[in-house]
Length: 332
Image 1: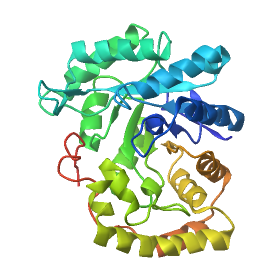
Image 2: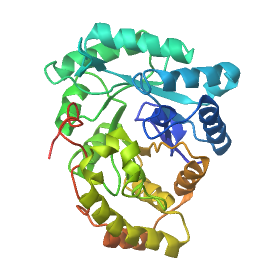
Image 3: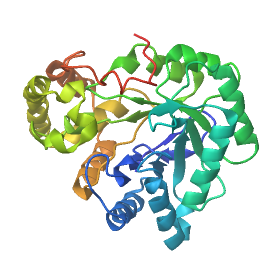
Image 4: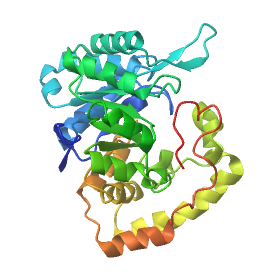
């Protein structure tokens, strides 16, 4: 497995990581044993970058990582662990954002306990609380780093301008953002700003929530996934249109002799050495296909062919609905 640096001061990690939101039931039911089997596969393949959050399955993702590390203590030295906090609930159960010092440290402490570790390698603010100055929040993250509770700090779903404000206070090791052939908004400033500042761009949903694979969810399948059921890109008319367009990409991948997911991952890795995809899946075969993408090397002609079948702006529908947009920063 090829490696890349997690920010200019960070550790070497596998070029391909894994998003452990799939250890919750977000995309469908799974089990602790199945999640542990995926962790075994990651170590066998050299996938060392493991990303989770306190809210994935209300802590279940972290607990299952913790039970794996307890059973296999040597794995802790091989995995680079990242987790996130900053999403909370009000008294009525509605989602709210909390970037206060008390909340972030308490949630990080709880994450460490669930995973059975004394520190994580990277701690993100999961969603920025707009009313709280990002400079103040960055100082909180820096104090957590100084205490040894995390070795690196980052933000998820922030704008390039916010990254610059934060970086003026303390170096930001990583920014996490949705980025793929389907979602290319990061190219309007975030990719460039991260490269300039020596910040890793950790790309989640790199295969477009299945749309850039050989087995995309079909119309009707999304009814069992609450997030996708209300997501504009999976609304029936948009979904049909997006499937028709991405059929061309699947055909191209077949002509090139690789899985579509592998080609999508390879394209993303070709966009910059600071870009680190973290696909999430419950299926070992899907993970193997993503791993294959980390080994592909695409030349200029290959990239041009991909751009020809999936030009910028091809996707029908916004990437989030109004509720899902609460927290992520728009910047274009």
